[in-house]
Length: 189
Length: 145
Image (cartoon, rainbow over all chains, first blue to last red; front, side, top):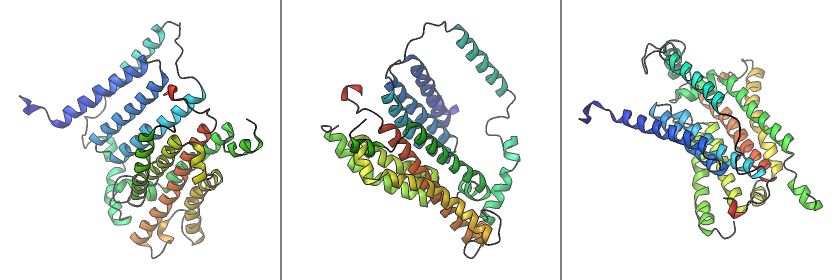
């Protein structure tokens, strides 16, 4: 009876089920520590989905950043504020309506998308074949993703690195960090 | 967290492999999945784990904040410097052809160098942001977890 169902399909259905369950739990739970942990779980499950889609580089980033660093930073932020979400008295009808309409529009738009994994999809017919054909000759690194990111798209990656640097500068300016040692010496908080 | 001996022992055991793995991801980004960004994050995680378990001050004793600040800019400088070097050598900005003997050799080295820049910046930025948040935090009580 199981012959018609592939293992990949079972894994995908399982991952998506867990993903939806995690999302519902995030909405329901009021304790923010649990929410931070659950969003880490959500990221890890998405990383699993990316692996199932053969996007290992993206999965790697999602697991390291989404499940790792973001969770730690959310916990750090939580320690600076409160650990429980306030319950609102407003009616949830309008937000639910907006969510449902947006969701319906997104599902409707998927009907126009090319079939999943088809080689004729526009994304596979634009620059991708060019990169795949030229990377072994011009760059010579086995991982085409790295070849594109660091060589063909070196400008973009330089921009991204600068963005990360700018983010750190902004955080340091806002939180006035790195002054703990000084405060300790003067003995004032 | 002085009395959490299991956490302390396990995290001490885990930190060296995490750093080795980060270095593996950094230098093998052109052969397998990963690269400077992922390696930087993993590298930062080793220090953040140390900071979480043993306290931020213990971590900044190992990695002073002044060093983190310098490293944040150093990575971007390495990346942009590679571009400038190519420019000064008479090539386009970030054209790795300027490095060494050109061809695949130059591409390989160019990618390694800029990925190193990305790795240094990402690692120090992640550690820096963590320190920025954590050093403002009143010490977490065990009941809060």
